[in-house]
Length: 329
Ligand code: DP6
Image (cartoon, rainbow, N blue to C red; front, side, top):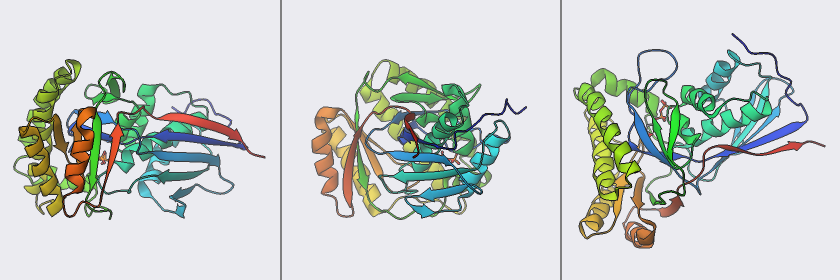
């Protein structure tokens, strides 16, 4: 049932920020019910440095959406607004969103984008949602966005499929070095890829059941800050997800040659005793998660690989937050 009408302040710009997160135990596949419920639990780290900044104003006509200053007709943004309006009274909005990193190339821009959007709308329209409600609303737009509401180490699982913070960003500081190997948007969006994998991969049932056990182990490794065990588990979850993707029909191959080269280099570094592991999402970038003291060595090793366009480093970051509400002149 819609809540009591709220008066959005027509003269106010609300600004929110959120960061992408990277899953160490992956979500790939959806439950067969409305609401974009994941079929697997997941465990992630929220990054700092990479940021989506979203400004919300009341619009004079209908909704307007700009991504990196370009007007866009984005079905997922429209669906997010429509879903929110089934529950809350939200006026037409002008939304301006900007990423300081490549969009839709496997750097979780939809996670930070929808976390920032839901957070900005909540403040702008004075909805006063709890973190769990923000997470549930973000999840409906994009499963991984539910996790970017929180900082540090984050878990998302049954029964309610809202995310929760396991460890804040300062408790177990890790660094993630990201090797960018391509900047164009991915060929098969995650939602479509998940649908194909669920419908066609013979590995899908095993993926679902084994990820539940991976999640339980992942929580234990995070709570005991056991880097070596988390490294083995995260690489296993990543390679298992890519095995599932590749065994779909058509086969989903999100990697390029440099992706594989980065994976091999990270494995060699770990075999040589460096605390580092890799993970890769639905795109060709490689994320090397490491103890902060080896981040420079890891970044140098990845930057030297032909096909690596550049590297970026991030520590663990905070969850989505409102930066400012500025009255217009
Ligand atoms: C490979 O959250 O982008 O990054 O819910 O359809 O928007 P939708 O999917 P999305 O998928 C994330 C997939 C992943 C793994 C993960 O982040 O857990």
